[in-house]
Structures are given as structure tokens and as C-alpha cells.
Image (tube, rainbow, N blue to C red):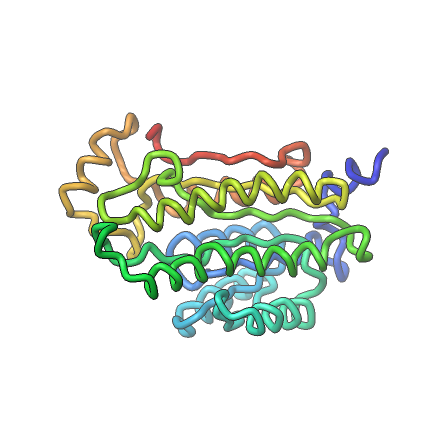
Length: 265
């Protein structure tokens, strides 16, 4: 069996005597990130529950995973600050074992604003969180997981958005552009690191029912839901199901793909 085939089939396992390795989930204190962290913990992975500003909810997510017999640590890091990202990876390995997967979930929509009124400083902030941050996280993940660095392969999942394809809701042009960047980045990186035993994919959710969603009662959101063939909002758990599958050995031949989970939008 080739090195790539072996790595793609799940070097995520057999770490520190546990069934699975360690997954870092950024932005995991609530919403989609919390659902992903919870499901991965239930599946047997050690989970680094990353947060930037919501410490208490992150600690609650980690505590719930541990209460069900799992391994989890809540770890602070602002993904837009490279030094904090480096410490996130070091702490995750110290506390939970070698990192075998990364879920780049942390992100922000920014305030809905007509594009001609967008301030350059706000655009830079959005890019730092939604694009540069995930890239820095992925760089550390590749360094930890690549076979040429002594790693055993693994998986990276970048949370994008259906907005990358549809253009998104009014006033969120920069957000849609950053998510398009994540889809392209995932495809390009997957080509480069496949021989290192690392799979890279993106997941593009539609409108998901979380407390961080855009105003769910806005006319734009209601219209988007009305045009969804399934006719409802998505649930965080439905995104978590997809991410958990992509990380698992069941998806060992899946890389460079963008999985749309949007109710048909």
C-alpha cells in the first residue's frame, strides 16, 4: 500500500492508546463549532475546543465532552494572531496528544454594509480572521501531520459557505469573497499535501439556525429559506455530521472536495 493510501485511511487513530487522535476545532465555543467539537468528542477524538472571547461556553463544551468519557480542553487563541495559533497547537499536543485533524471553523460575517461604504480597516480585519487565520492554522497542521515532518497524516476541514457560490446575503460581499477563498485554498492545498498523507476538504453550509446567524427574521433571510428546496434552516448538527465523516477513515478517498450542506440552495 502506498504511503498516501495508508495515511488517507486514517492515521487519525492509535494515539496515546485512544481510539482516535486529536482534533483542533477553531471557534468552537458555540454554534456550528460547538456542535462539531461535541460530535467529534462523542466519536472518540480528543478535542481542542478553541475560543477567542467566549471562555465560559467553551469550557462548558469541553466539560460536556469529558462528562461523557471523552478528552477535551478549552484553549484560548485568536486565529488572527499567529503567535496565539502556535501556542494553540502546542497546548493541544501537550494536553491531548498529537494533532491529527484541524477544523477551521472560526470566522465572522462582518456587519452588513453596502460595498462602497466598506472601510479598509474592517476589510483587513475580516481577511485576517476568515482567510489568513485559517491559513496559519493549516500551516501548523501540515507541519504537525505531514509524513515528511515525522507525522502520520491526517485531515483538514475548512468551513466555507454557500455564499462563495451564491454571493450571499446583501451587504456581505467581503464575507462571500473570503469564503470563496477558503474553497479555493482547500482545493489548492489538497493537491500539495496529498503525498504527505493529508486530506483537505471544505464544507459550505447554507443558512444555519444558530445564535450567530444573520438576523433570522430579516426579509432577506426569509426569502433565502423560502427558496431552499427543503424549505427550512439547517441545524448545526447537520454540519457536524458532515465534518465528522470527512475526518473519519470512511472518507479516506475524499480530498479536494467542497461539500455543500445547504438544503439545496
